[in-house]
Length: 540
View 1 (spheres, rainbow, N blue to C red):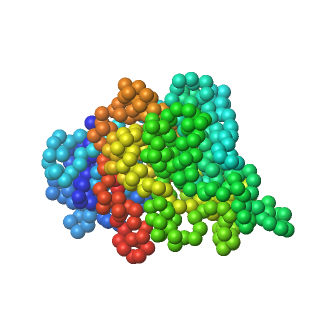
View 2: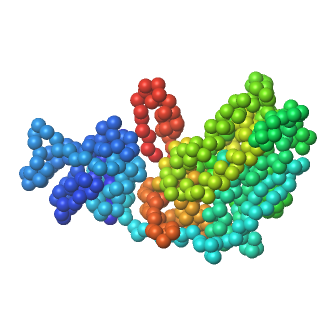
View 3: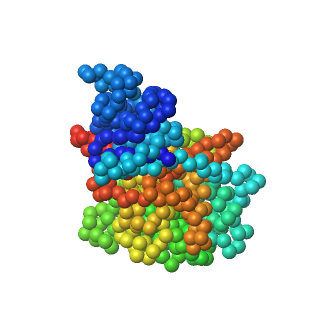
C-alpha cells in the first residue's frame, strides 16, 4: 500500500519513507530512512508546472533523524541540504497530477496513522500502483467500419454534408458527432471506423463549415467584376439571393440544423458527442430538445460562443450592432474580412494553430492539414467566416443551458484533455460542479482535441459510457470498477498499440467540485500577469 499525505492549506508536501536501500528518482537520491520522513518545502515560485523544484530535507530530519541519518545527508547547521528535481515539481494541496514521475516508482510506503497524526488539514491520497489498463488500438482498414458520405438538403439550397458508419447495426444506439470550429465531419473518422462496429454513428458539418458551404454565391456581384476576384470571394455582392435571405451562421441556426437532421435523417433519439464548438452546440440542442437526446458527451467543449447580443434577450443592446451576420456582407466589413481571412487561412498560420491545440504533434497528420486547408480555399469560406463571427448569441446562456439539462436529467459525460490551452479543464469542472451526476474523465497528455490525439482512449471511454447507459448501469463505467478511484484523484495509466508501437496516457476520474475562487483565478490568471499582479497557480 502506498500513501502520500499533502497539506491542503500549506505549501508543504510530507512523504512517508521506509526504504530498505537508496533509490534514485528523477535525480533525487533518497537514502535509507527507516520510519523517517522527508519534508519538502515548496516556495511560491515553484508552484508553476514544468519548473525545477528545490526540495529541502533538513526541516523534518533535523529533529527526528539519528546521527547516522544526518551523516548520510551531510547536514550542516548553517546550510540546508537541497536536491534538484530534473522534471516536474511535486504537487501540493490535494492534487497529485504533477507527481507523475514519482508515482509507480514503489518509493511511497504506507505509514500507520499518518492521516491522523498530520491533522485535519491533510488529504491522504491513495497511490496504490495498479496494473496498467490495456485497451484496444484503432481497427485497421479491414476490421474498421466502412464510412460513407452523404448530403442532405435542408431548406432551399442549404446542403448539409455528413458521414456515417455502422448502418448494419440494426437496433443499436444512434450516436451523432458534432465537430469544432474550422473542421468538419472528417475530424471524427477514427470514431466512426471504431465505434461504427458497435453503434450506428453519424458526423455532420455545420452549415458554413466543412463541406456544408453553399454551392452558389449567396450575394453575387453585379456588373463587370474581375473573374478571379469573383471566384475567390463569394457573399460580398450588393443583393442577397432569395434562398439565402434568412441565412445567418448562428448557434440558433445550427441548433435547428441538428434537430431537423435527427428527425429527418436519423429518425430517433441520439447520443450526442461534441468537441469545442460542437460540445457547446450539443448542450444547446439537448437543452432545447431533450426528447431527442439520450445522453451527451462533451470533449473540451467551449463554454460560450458569439459576442453580438441576441435581439430577443437584449433588444436594446442588439440595436447597437448594425450587422448581425446576414448576407450580403456589408462593404465596410469586406476589407476587414479579406485582410483577416488572408492571414488566418495561410498554411503556416493553420499549422501554428494546430501546434497550439495538439500536445502530440504526431497526430497532426498531412491528411488532417490538407482537409482543413481545402475548406479554407472554398470561395464562400471568407464570407461564411465573417457571418459566424458577427452572428448573434443564442437564445439561452450557458448557465441556462446547464440548468435545463440538469432539470431534464440528461446524462452527461465529460472527457477533457488536461493540456488544452484554450478550454482549460476548469471549465469542465464547472459543468461538473453544476451537474454533480455528470461523469468526468481527464486525459494527460492531451490537448483541445482528445478524440484526434488519443482516439483509442476516447473511444474506449465513450463505448463504456454508452454501454453503461444502455444496460441501465449493469455494465460498469470505465475506471469505476476500481474502488480506489472513487475516493481519490488517482491517475491510471492506459496503454494501447498504434502503428506497431506501445503508447500510454494517464486518465483519472474527476469527482471534486471546483471552488469558485479557484475557478475565477484560473480564468483570469493571464490578465493578472499582464497587469503586474501575482500569479496564483490553482490546481484542482
